[in-house]
Amino acid sequence: MRRRATDYRRPVRRRFSYWIWGLLVLFLVAGLVLFVVHHHHEYRAEQSIQENRRTEVVPSEGLNFTEELLSVTSFARQLSNQMTLAKSYVIIAKEHNNLQLAWELSSKIRSCQLLLSKAAMRGESLSLDEAQPIIEGLTSLIYKAQDAHYDIATTIMTMKSHIQALEERANAAVVQSAVFGQLAAESLPKNLHCLNIKLTADWLRNPSIQELANENSNSPRLVDNNLYHFCIFSDNVLATSVVINSTISNADHPKQLVFHIVTNGISYGAMQTWFLTNDFKGSTIEVQNIEEFSWFNVTYSPVMKQLLDAETRALYFGSSEEGEAKFRNPKYLYFLNHLRFYIPEIYPLLEKVVFLDDDIVVQKDLTPLFSLDLHGNVNGAVETCLEAFHRYYKYFNFSNPLISSKFDPQACGWAFGMNVFDLIAWKKANVTGRYHYWQEQNSDRTLWKLGTLPPGLLAFYGLTEPLDRRWHVLGLGYDVNIDNRLIESAAVIHFNGNMKPWLKLAINRSI
Image (cartoon, rainbow, N blue to C red; front, top):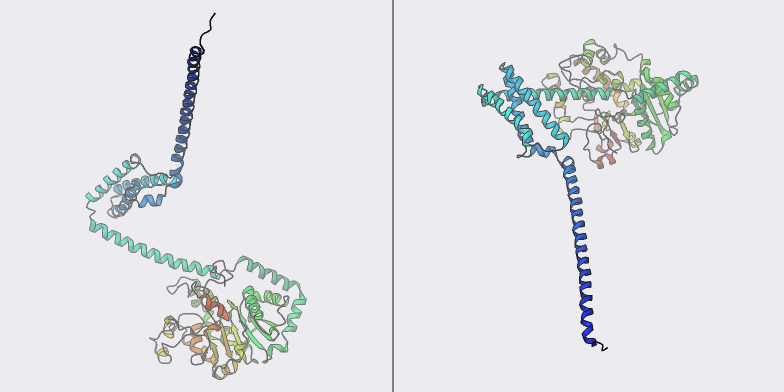
């Protein structure tokens, strides 16, 4: 049997092989297409879900409702404007005794406020369906109010009167705020009050501290004019301690410093305990009780008589037309505040002292003050007339001939708080007598209002030597804009004003 030629058999096998491979490739392509389509649908579905989630979350987080109220195209803005207009018509309706209209307007205003509140809470813009009923209701009522002859002239006059009333309320709020600030400044912080109680208890329990106080009161250093003498009149233990510590810390020779403290009977034991049981680098500290000054009485001191007067005390603690917060400060009733005019009586053997307020902090050595030439004057002080309101005409009633005939209205004021006093020149000029004279002349408070600075400006008039401004920088108790360079260069910084550093309302600023 004869075999077929080779070239005849091969084409048959190739056609069968190509057909099989073609089917396989077709199935593979179809499977790949199905796989791609399936996964593409899954991806689109997942992306759609994520977009929906973002659509749900973003509005509640991203909507700024303040911007919504300012947008001219928002329903919230339209409702807010209508509500403001409706409020003005409520006032006008009440003034015209149209209580029904006033009630209807008020009801719609409350609905409007509730809707705006809900929109703000959910963080979504108001829709037309939500806003339209209230917008239409408010519009109808506003037209109704206008038809009731509430014309624009009436509206303007009414709004002017209410603006004036709001201004008066705002002014009253400012005054009330000043009064509250004054009360906060006068209050004793709890921790400081507790410190006084603990120190007083220690004073009463420890007779040894009292014996040591008696010994120190007879120290010859207290009258040695070769030493540097400072006097402080205060009932604040913490504040006095800051003054003394800062003075000692900056002194070249602390052992040559002598501090004379006068306090009241309540704080006397606490003061003695604190300064007797702590180390102050060898300096001498004396504490005296003002209640033991028998010479300081109503017979000798006209200011004591005035401070005990019922009318004067009513000015501070009662309701009075003169009751400006800064003048009603009870600190003006403290006898300690007026002792600065009796320094020669308190320290008759001393020749020169530096007076320090209890709201100052010392930053440099103060002993050079004792070698300053005062040119025969009694008081060395920093002048404060860089601003116009610190000149004499701002402190005194120059319409009174007693003032206008003796003083220059443009004379420069100066500051209490850090003063050098030549006590020999003081006695020669009889400054205390001058102070008594002016206090008696001002018994009816017609020459000046209150305080210790005005009588000081009169008593030391022509007897004050201006000191370099860097010795004493004031204003840290109320002015937050003092130049840091001025503060850093100052020998003494003064927290005058209500914001004392030991109070919570103190200015929060690093020095």
